[in-house]
Image 1 (cartoon, rainbow, N blue to C red):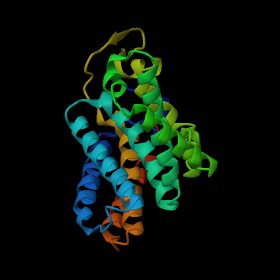
Image 2: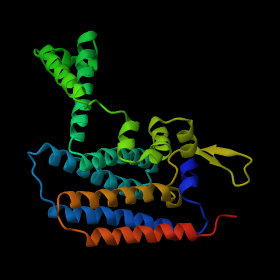
Image 3: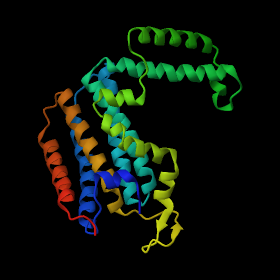
Image 4: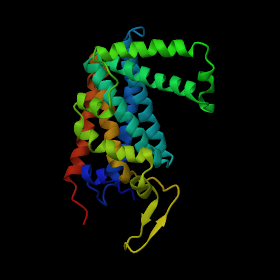
Length: 272
């Protein structure tokens, strides 16, 4: 049984959840199918950085959603919350970029910051993973140009943003202080994550076992599936609104179906 606290905070467990959890899984897969089916309705300028990065983020989120569907079906649940963290981070960038085209300059600043860090590391000491960068004939020229561009962007107020700053701009501070914390623990394999994945407590609470490849129980992933559905539906609505595809009917139906499932969870009796 997964014991991540945010499951308990956001979704109350119940012994009668089997039908609801299967409905959540089916909806998650249907959200993906709908999103992919609507993509041909999108029209954008691939040479425009704002369009390109916005669509790129949306494509990434769509692929992460599909991956989660596959992993749950294949009993590979350990990776699902790690994918959810990536999805959440992509959503934050996506919403910020959709709201403000200037946010792309912050993304560019982060891109420069990370490449500068790698080029400096490649030139400071031998590193077998950066050997190719160290041998670049124009490494110092690239480094100088990128440092100059980063300084220019920073002087204009477009500095690389920390994660909490991104969440704050997207009005998702509560998610950063809760859900994101739990998902980072899953990604970093801390004690909380190890316990929830591999420690199986006996029914009478007197003993436990350490288990490898714990079979997926969809009941344990209701909160994850809810988040996948909620994020995917939201960004699908936004991309079609921003790129003016006028596609709303299918997205509205998905929203209604998700709300129906949430209402079922909220009205179920709590466990004894």
